[in-house]
Length: 280
Image 1 (cartoon, rainbow, N blue to C red):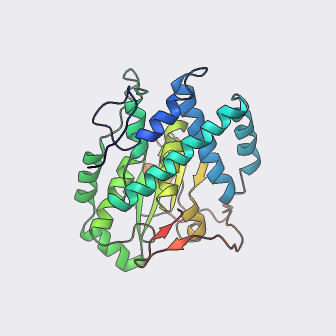
Image 2 (image 1 turned 90 degrees about the vertical axis):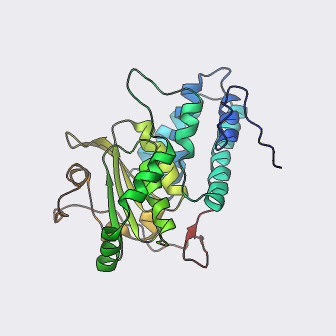
Image 3 (image 1 turned 135 degrees about the vertical axis):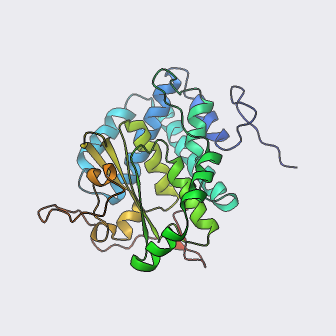
């Protein structure tokens, strides 16, 4: 019987993300747990983004350097180890469970949720149930008609609802890496980073918008590697207004809108026998 070692302050029911929690707590001596978690999200998200999205690269690189310099060299290595723990964890759950909201659980087990702001993420078993209730004949029809289904999420949080939908697609023998395109939004940059990291590492084509879907304000856009590799900017072309009116028909984009598409590349990624792309 396998034994799972968890940090002392980690609730006994937490299994996924235990190594991430331990790595974050190892840096919580001279920095607050909140600060370490937030900085880990930022530098990890930027590290992925700057490999595939050249438009905001300079600005994000400056943010990366400003963030990382708060930590001593040995602490910087530990911060990188948190990202390594996330990759290992998502690789494990992708093989055993499929899409799963690991970072949402980490956030709560570290007791970083703020009850005064109502920042509580939906438990993943509820996300999975909602996904199974949503995926149906309409999803199949959209895939038959255009080859994929679009999903808009106006308050993405850690990405749990999107991952629940992807898991339901997988259960239905649909390929969420090739037949799903997500446009999501959140007003909290921490949530944007969480969703971006998880959707990126699960190989889901997605745009994550840091903005307010109620007012259509937009501050930054994060394209997952699968979105850029698959040339989804040429197919989907959604924006924050589409998130706000997700139930309406897809609008025709402004002809003057500039879409950043990566040049032809030689990125090395794996495709298994079912056509699923793996970054691991």
